[in-house]
Image (cartoon, helix red, strand yellow):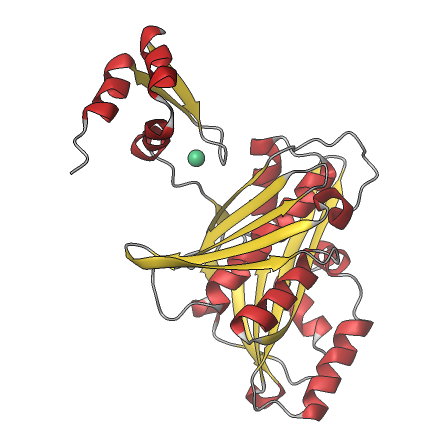
Length: 293
Ligand SMILES: [Zn+2]
């Protein structure tokens, strides 16, 4: 599909439910090609990226610069899977081992047992807020549903889907359905039933735009999209800079830094976008010469 990635918002059951949905096909395809992801890695990171975009909007308290980082740190073959997005619709991510040997893995097994950390912050204001949850092995959408319930006291359903084809990511997207505390038992039951009956999200995403996907999933639930002027364009965008790439070198030991200086400098590759930053011996020396006080 050539339509641009976007986040849409709506309401269902007369305001009992808030709906946030995202079409992320191009964002996930960009991640796949930039990071050379095997299908299961594209599936995992695609779900995580979509989830981070949805959560950045869901948890936004009218803060312009808010971002959400999801870190899945399991003992599975993928290693760490990290996705980060801000409320303005920019997302980026990283998979530690993008090409696992076993090509038959599903996402929960590829991630394995471990922890999910969710960091949210709004630089430059204040300290970021981190929550940690043990992974239940039930898939990324389920982990995020559990995180929202346990850490944010938000009752919700999270649906995520990525469809891989031989030539790349054919469709990706997600929906978060948030139940407000005043939602009636009947309307909750109705929405749950619809979610249970709906075809897999990735199947729907391949056939129709996100607007129709949500309408299909929430058929009979009085779903109304709010004005498309509130849509947020989504993209895979890395905001790395030479300054940020240089900073971590300060954490290396004196010996390690001296080695870089002796070699005439070093090169740092951004793990999110593959951009390369070249630092001279003088850059590295300047880093340590900075007074701490
Ligand atoms: Zn980058």
